[in-house]
Structures are given as C-alpha cells and as structure tokens.
Length: 121
Image (cartoon, rainbow, N blue to C red):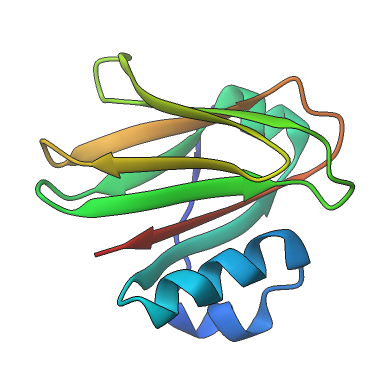
C-alpha cells in the first residue's frame, strides 16, 4: 500500500519537528515554496510515500527522525527506477522532474517515525 503525501504552505509555520523546520525556512528564504510536509510511520516509509511531481519543476526532498537516526531515502520514478537518494541525519534529495507523474519516496531501515518535507521551484 502506498500513502499519499500532500500538505499546503501554511504548515511551514507549524512544523513540529525541528529537524526539517530549519531547512524549510532556508528554502523559503531563497525562493522555494513548500509542497508537502508529513510524518509517517517506519512501516509506511518502507512501503513508500507517493508524490505527484510536475515535469520541469525542481524539487528538494528531505527527511529526518526526531531522534536523529540516520535516514536512507530513495526517490523512484513511475517505472520503479531510482532517480535520487540521500542519507544522513537530514537526508536530502534534489531532483528536477523530467516527466509528470507519481513518484515514490522510500525511507529504509527506520525504527522511529520519519518526517518528510518537499519544496519546489
């Protein structure tokens, strides 16, 4: 099962996880907009979170856990090909979408909830 991830700009002010809030505000200050913010269980992160991306748009995708656990993120295109990856306490992927469609973001080997944010320009 793949879960949908979609939240509006207003949530940037209410981000409860400090691990992504600084990055969101940094992106906002340099002209990026917030696309999505969500916290998902380790099981959902492993199954995949579905993102709707638009061709020709640049995206920053980043994720972290409240306890600072290292995160391994992978972004997969509609055909299942890995389009980008990031790892670390604040994992980050920068991606420019070559086609519109539904992409899948996966966070692997997590034991605590994953907070994911997507900004775009």
